[in-house]
Length: 339
Picture 1: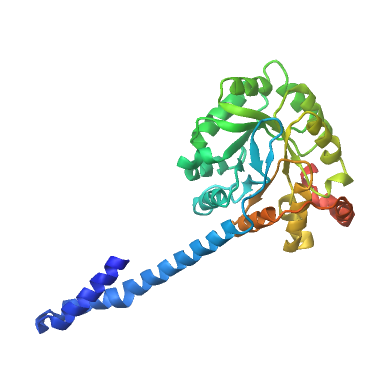
Picture 2 (picture 1 turned 120 degrees about the vertical axis):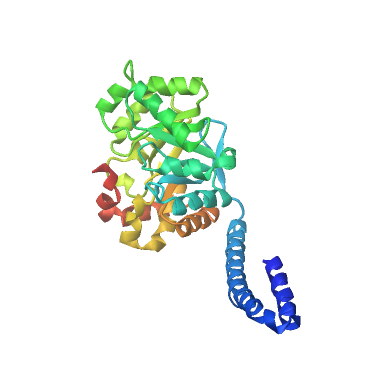
């Protein structure tokens, strides 16, 4: 833009000193540059500087995101992770999804998650990460119950996300005893997960579930998973509680515990308003988990969540109990994922 300004000044001098027969075309160029292009570029540049300045303040505000150990893996992750849903669970939204992932990295988040089942989520990561892949802890999931199908999923996930390995690969959404029989049977997915870890295609293996805590708890006894991903929110204690039935067992096994459904996919804001997000997020991170994994629709949501995580203070037990009772009459709506 500086060169264009200089050219505009030189053109002004030329316009003033040139013969009259040159005036028409010099005047036209002069008007275009001085009257249109330069004001546009100045405005655009100022807008960019304002955005960069605002983001710099946001990144600096509150210092770095706190980290916690991911169980016995030897890895630490930020207490807030980016989930693979929200805007990421779409197709054809590259202009929104890719910048959101990149901004999450800039803001200090280290845990990033996706799944084969999440529409174009993995492809967005493939577009966004590039040379920044090794800055983050990258996770994905397979909902295949048989070993061959799971390995095909892993092959596609690696190619789509444009990476040679996953930091964490999870068996996705375990719901029923039939799932358990298939996954842990002779040709089940568990064998594929074991082989993938042995062959260094994945560093760690995990499991996720949000329908039946009894089934997920049983799964933890059938395989030495490194992590478990489960619902963590104040509605959980009221019915079929993952906090009561799964979390203590995962703790005793030294597993990395990842919290999902912390905001009930936005249901909390529909019931209690946007201001409730901080309490729901604070409640989740106050539990003995490694990270709360939250999907985002917009960069503004992402930035808000990061600010809250940076200023996190544990919620006192008494306040947790009050909060649990406050949401009791809305528990069914908040736990839509169990229906």
